[in-house]
Amino acid sequence: ASAGLIISEATVISSQGNGWVGSPGIYTEEMTAGWKLVTERVREAGNHIFLQLWHCGRASHSDFHGGALPVSASAVKLNGDMIHTPYGKKEYETPRAMTETEIQSTIEDYRRAALNAQNAGFSGIEVHSANGYLLNQFLDSKTNLRTDKYGGSVENKFRILREVLEAVSDVWPLSRIGVRLSPNGVFNDMGSDDFRETYRYVIQ
Image (cartoon, rainbow, N blue to C red):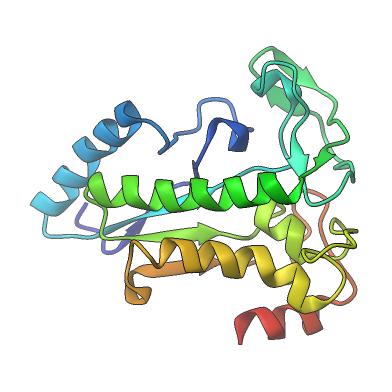
């Protein structure tokens, strides 16, 4: 805890967001209480810790969700190595495109997770929008083939991240909110030719 500002490993905002065996969460009272044990020790050392908010999106498997397919911006399968699930290594599945209602529910999950992070004693949050996970899947044209208000133009692809940031800023001041981006990342089968145009807009 004496190292300097700490940013936690990715922490899922909902059961739907899970896609990594043994990963932490921030969507129940028990999880919030568990994190409080960590933040108290960090504060005792005079330091700060931010919680990284995460949703795996298509980088998941139905084994994590009682047989329900993982969700993404569009039904575009992740082509890569097999995924470790609670029942062993398996092939990735083609995800289901989120409905607009589900998108709004997920934005609310981010807001609730931000509030739980505050109640757990964190100093701030970082919204994970990188490395091929859900929000990155909406940003990149490789994985976002939508034709509604969350796809097509750069402005539309950015919309969910903007709405997530608006939601969490109801809980935290902007000075306590970070965003993780990977503009030209290829992890989790990502990478789009128009990344310069996309991420110049996103960063602005």
